[in-house]
Length: 256
Image (cartoon, rainbow, N blue to C red; front, side, top):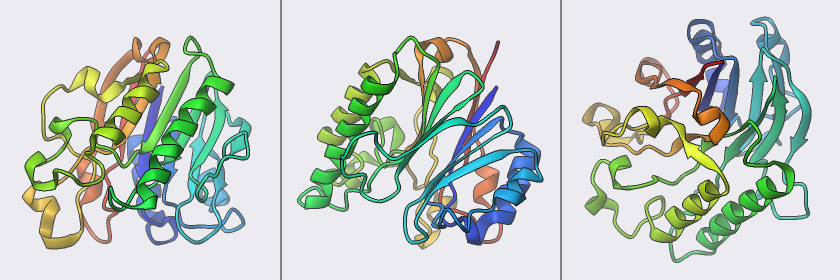
């Protein structure tokens, strides 16, 4: 099984690139973020032509998350299962085969002295509570997406350059660690412990070509899945070419 995640930064703009990537990467499950399309406008038929069931959670403005699966898509849930503030179409879950898959787009936080930063921490806390309410660590669970948090200094091109900023603050990293303590493993790191392996590069100033980036897109797996992971990849080639997303897709392969 191949589980992939990709912040596509507008599915309307980049649908052809997503279709191309699906055809050669052949993920069994693709979690997408920042789709920026409404549910009514989501390209269900285009994905069906490639052999995928799909579902969307978006209002057509900002944010938006989606799932595409060729191994089943059942028990779809959009948003948290409580009255908690979702902060705009940032979570959806479904059962794909025997795996409960979550596509998440964590709030950016903007700056550490802002109300948006506090809201980001609250959102991560609510995500952990959501998992505790709806899953067990012994289940097959995947939480994938753009977390807008670089887990540690290995995941940043120059920690000193952005010290004190969002994405690298202690409180954000602690919130991510607390989420993992529920029973999740950063599957990419099981295969690649080395630094400077990024998933996001700002469009500005040629940062991709300068290798100025961060690893903020994650595939977190429950231990039963993580123990079966065999391979992982950040596909930098998908960040190249005409009108790319500022994120590269990544995937993790899981054996039988």
